[in-house]
Image 1: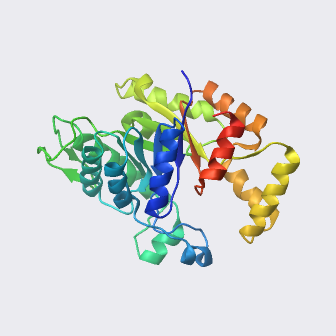
Image 2: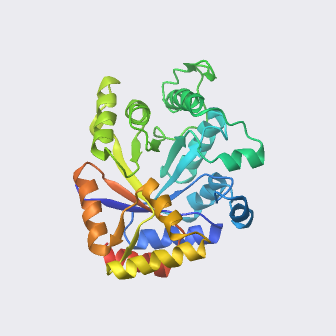
Length: 307
């Protein structure tokens, strides 16, 4: 199966609309938006960075685009009750003509919760919340409306209207070794596996969880995402990273540590192509290019990679 490509971008609405049209013209299959209330990790940067509501922006894109999937990658369960996510997801899928995928996660950015006063339980508790939310959403999108009774969330056996003509796809993603693949295999239609150690093993655990849940593992789309930086030569790549570090007010060692934690495909064009091919061989079917969108820079990157 050929590897599909997509964009994940953030910013003001007009830029997102341009990005969606560019992605479609380049043969990309989806545009994804992150769901954050702040778009930077430090208070100084976050105070300057625009962070619109992604789900509202997706409503605009649902009406002003066609022929490209729309994805939220991902909505923290700390922000919204699963009833709100169910209603929003169904509405966006109807508005887009069946092109929306609802990604849900635990939330991870401490600062945005602190600034807005959003309760931010410990990681273990957030995973418990996520598991119940996924079970709730899986039931909410079931045309048989079976309902769900959990410790935190309850949904009556009751027909929800309006509801999309299809089951709205759910996405689960992250770097977790065991719980994340299990949740993806049990509930998700797409598993977004971040680059890093045990990439193939995490995919296999997702598939095993799907079988255990009585689901078809081959029906789960395997994707990944990352901030790809590629240049023609190693010297050009190294020089560019120096520029990025300076622009961010970071030491180069800090930038290297930041990327080492996230492990995105980076290097020369040839090296990045090899990394993406290896991920494809391991089971990845779609890759989301993350980052600040610029048509010129994005086109140059895709051209260099032969996409």
